[in-house]
Image (cartoon, rainbow, N blue to C red; front, side):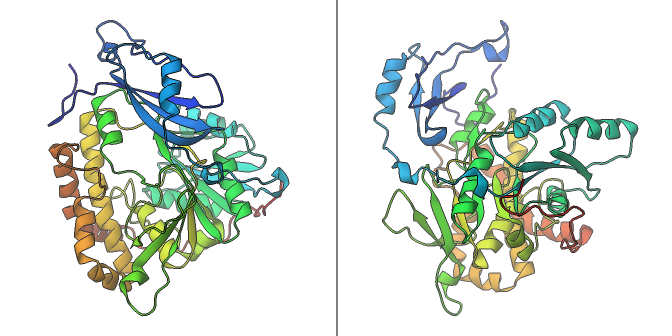
Length: 449
């Protein structure tokens, strides 16, 4: 029996397709390969098609499959109607390999799903990038011979190093990874994500071409939408809103303690019309599964708050705080659509309930953390009481009563109410500790092998 959500639309499973406009397009079939009688036997009712140019997503459309297979020619006709993204705005910049920086990729893991972890490492090692390393951080080290053997197996390739971090939490693991990173650039992803072959190249080119940029984020697209929980998460908001063009974010120019002091200006390469400033607390600049920093800039903001994130009572919010601190302190960030990650969303309704509750906890925990670390943020939030309440209740414009299940909204609202106490409890259990100790291995500067 298929899971049901309150008010669920009959969308059914959705086929995820990546179609390169420069190559042959596929026929879109509703049929699925599944054992008879299994939940997956039901055919796809639609397809979510991401149009790409040179591997870079430039738009998407949803195609109804309830009438049967949609031929490639018809798909091509519909894709041609998408609003084009100018090539100069689609995320690619030309940089010779010799100028690309050495990048350290930090992957926190509890090593519970070894098959996914090994698949993730394999994808990372096949990246199209001249000089990088992978730092796996075991966040549940147990000292056993079995765990040591797993570490050895994962680090067979000389580009992979495995380190331990006994303090639970994704932030503690990321900070430990940064301490061991050799690169002047450090990128972060998760052990259940699928990186695009050009993922690091997108980061490296951006940092090499724009010296004033200290952080780069990219799109997080679905790897599959086979269950109702996955479909609802993808179509119900809660994700990035940057679209498919390069967007530069910087702190708004302001004096004193005006509202603008706590706002961010976005410059869209595809749209010269100025965007209205948004609060630095907007939580839409990037996601922890797909972000990269100049190592020095990350250290300058204190790294990740170890009282936040998965594995702590706050369940999240560490990426919100890191990116908000970065922008508030005057650093610049770029959303680059070429830095693509595909993510496996939660498959079951119970997992989705827990995720949405965690999103709520993490968001208000992040706001609490910002105020605790710098009381001036209290002034910023007071300036933005009405917008902040709106953000806390409805952080994405497409989360409306008609499109967002009330059940999930209730989960998130319960989390929002619990976030401040969760952060204070987590901070008592995880007092801040310095992360600026020297890396145990020599740094590798930009352009070095």
